[in-house]
Amino acid sequence: MKKLLLSFLFLGLYTAASAQIVPAFQLGVKAGVNLAKFNTENRFGSDNRTGFYGGLWGRVGAAGIHFQPELYISGKNTELTSDATGEVNEVNFTSLDVPLLIGTKIGAAGIGARLNTGPMVSFILSKDQKFGQAAANIYNGNFKNQAFGWQFGAGVDVRRISLDLRYELGLSKLSKDGYPDTKLNLFTLGLALRVL
Image (cartoon, rainbow, N blue to C red; front, side):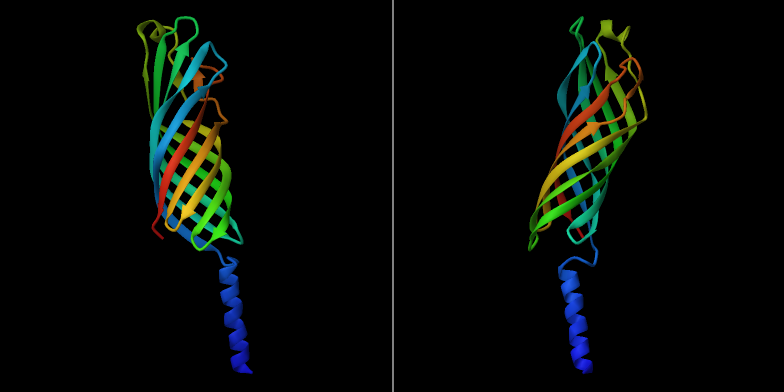
């Protein structure tokens, strides 16, 4: 009887672990590129420019749902073009980004597809502006040190390697003055390696 009970106990634990009722934990590194563009209602247009990002990610989940916090350094580059003069102003940010994502995964045997979404806070570490001479006298952006966004994404996992594509919608205005109602939106494409 004792052996039968132990057998059922081990079978139950194995089934729970297989069904991911017991939370699983993963940790990895990630790097990629981004395309950033200002969403502005001003007298400016904005064009996409390529930037970079790299850092760490973690994932904990059970029963097909996971929580995925990330921490990475991001270089975001964009430009504003004055509708009146055609003058191009380059704006470059370096930030510490912290997405807090909720997602789900479909698949088995280390291969699968993921969907995720969640808020993101960005702490601006440096901001550099390169103005044309005429625009510098009129439009000097005074950017905030923190921004909020919301990320939507999909990914593919093949064993320890992942590919992620995301869109980040800027929720907060970046400028204190100079560029009112300016928000930063971007697409990111990243390659991740799971180390744990």
